[in-house]
Image (cartoon, rainbow, N blue to C red; front, side, top):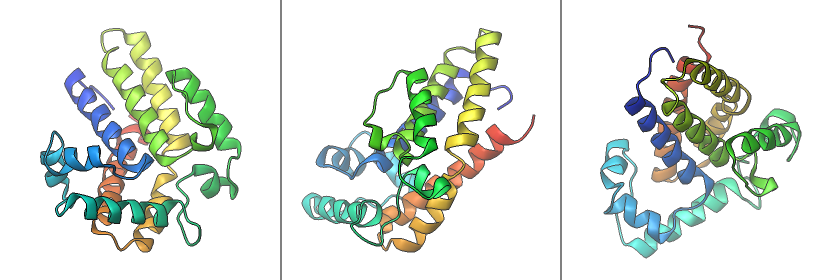
Length: 196
């Protein structure tokens, strides 16, 4: 990321925050309202995230699909990096994530530390911090390196998850969320991992 400005970085952090919340848990009534009719309705429409219909019915369908897709009990697509990169739940990546979580001052249940939603949330926090450090060259450069390192270590794997999740869902909402996340992270990969 060459010469970002504060506004662009704050927007980027906000988008990471949105994706984090959409992946970390199922859509509850509060989030349904925000996406369907509230503060996030324009964003949801711009992204093509379908959230129309009777609230209770749609919330139930989305919760069922979230659980089927990412929790199980069978044929689910685990949203945890350690499963994808090490073949086991709670491996070395979870330990590495705990270190990054300490750096950004976040505490999460240890079983969630390498979850896609948590990792996107950490990106949000680091990009937010980067946005507030643009005037301090030393801090800005250190943060850019931290973000690059984190992206390579803990975000790069997400593409594998998204490919499999895309094959496994029949939900229009989750199909679109998978596509949006994949497109966004492909662009972000070019920004953070392509040498300047």
